[in-house]
Image (cartoon, rainbow, N blue to C red; front, side, top):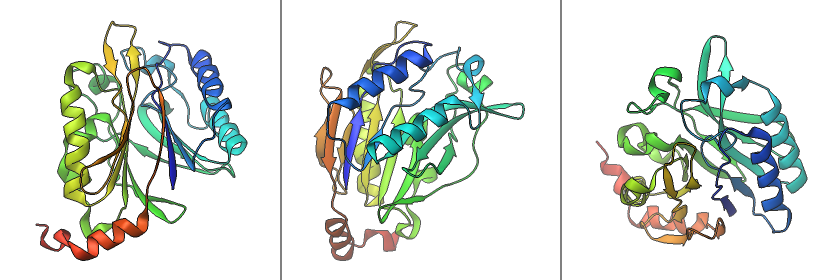
Length: 249
């Protein structure tokens, strides 16, 4: 499967501008089977998110449906939705035929306004695309190995959308590799680049990591689009030869 990551430099608080920017970025390239966008790619990550929450099937979902159909890909990214009285940081995956699934971020960031404004998800989710079983996670979730434990090899890929700052970039890079090694899976990590509206800097470091912890591709700071090919047969052979999961606690 071919995966395209867009390491989006998010326009702070401007939903329409971000959609236009993504459309332009994808218009001149050959995308893979999946396009992955960062966490809160329509707004940026900050205290303004809850005020910009959309209806569950609001305009960004409709836009993602059009993009998935146009490029015949699975479109993946997070934006804030309001469900009843709760706002949720919801990761969506939208299929070319318009149907979609979602995962609500389980670990909202305690040292920012997200923890107080955004509800926590409680459901562990695995979904399927083109024969791959995929585990979604959002940014801070990456720090919690028990939440992401690949019991019984239920997933083949861990898919992470993030707004992970440059000040903690080595943690991001290290944790992507650690989650791949310990869960015997590919890890796809899409982070934003640029500078946010609060002056926070992001180095990107988006990457596709194999089940041994080796990077198949990594995004340079000034190269926002990368595409990598992952091979399920190689993954299966590795698990058969080295069935470390049989000794999981």
